[in-house]
Image 1 (cartoon, rainbow, N blue to C red):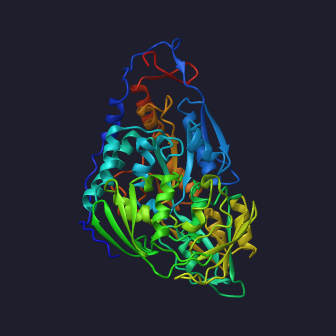
Image 2: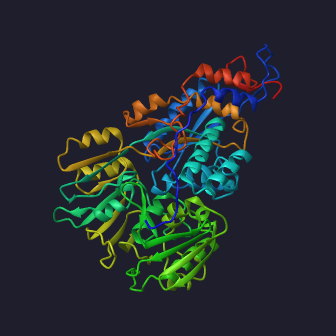
Image 3: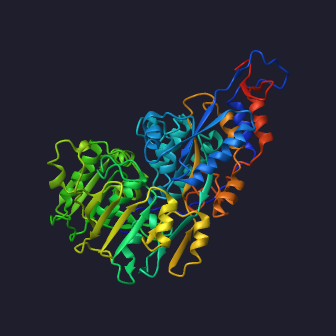
Length: 550
């Protein structure tokens, strides 16, 4: 990429072992170990442990079962609370914040390789507002300072050092606790389709795989089976889930995209010049056309970014915020003026934002209520139809500068993972991008099926709602982190396909993951010790309670 920026290769540094427990106890009230009566103890209320339903996400459901059982051994009352994805999961986590603790699965979206996602986006206090990614409600002035500083640092070595500090602080405070970084387990029918370029980070979760795969037989439209039950919207202003965003990237181009090796590369842009810390010039390809035949020009690019920011596009809000204005320099060149330096600008702002046709959206009276049917983009596929709860069909856009090799994609909603797997075995579908370990092993017996296993930066994690006690207590959160049987979960539920979770940034994201942070050891004695030293007690029946001085 013709991008004028410099930075030395980051260096590793050592982690100070043993700091965690001491810091946890400093922020809590130590009441000593003397015997106290139980008559004045206040029992902790029942914990509602949220998770996905067993039919939709069986592994995450079983993870929650194991976590609940372990926490009960500490004297907690825990009630499993499985709910459907996307809703009401999304409403609870992003809007109402109506949860105690929640087991979540974060898909390996390519934009999440940018470390800002699992630092500033997810934990900065400004993002604790409804719709923001700070679902935990975490607030730390020290963390905010680090997260803001790394955003403003273009030197790679300096920025990495700050990102490592962010991970250390999150490890100490534990608003989320990683459980497992699972491998990507996927499969496709190699008799029907062949030669996909499999992206390193997400496999078929990256739409680029669908741009390269080609027919191997009579079937020309590739059938993609998903465990989702449907999509809520395809309006770029309203999308809030990774599933919705994935569909957008079939239909809409972005200025930058991640290549198969996870490096940002030019897409709709053909050059980017970094004029200074807050000024970027972008040259746009001259052969771009929207699906209705209109040319895509600098006017569309400038309109897109200012329009999306003005209407507070849900999924893209944090990456659009740094934009002050976008200036049209000529028909195919724009200048971005940022309000402050923003290191993720190339990978996130330019790599995530779908380019909209100005001539379509400027006529929409109520953009945030617009159904956006049919969606008009400039991407490699164009929209054909959407049968609610059944399927979405896309067709090849032959005028694209990189037209796909298949005639189309038929996205079929199966509502559960087992049904999508069965459809693949029966040759009713061609691609499944989320398999269970036993399914992967079964598919190895089918000669027509090619299985795919990739080290993933996907994340299963436990989110604590730190707005409410006892989760507002760092020591309580750390005690619970020691009561999660990560290795057992990895071996029994993932058949070893992955690694126990430690830092928020997975080891597969080698450039940014902290090399010296290990998983919290599963140690119920340690968990009880942390609780006792922080002032918690147990009543005569073994129920956990607040100590008399809390």
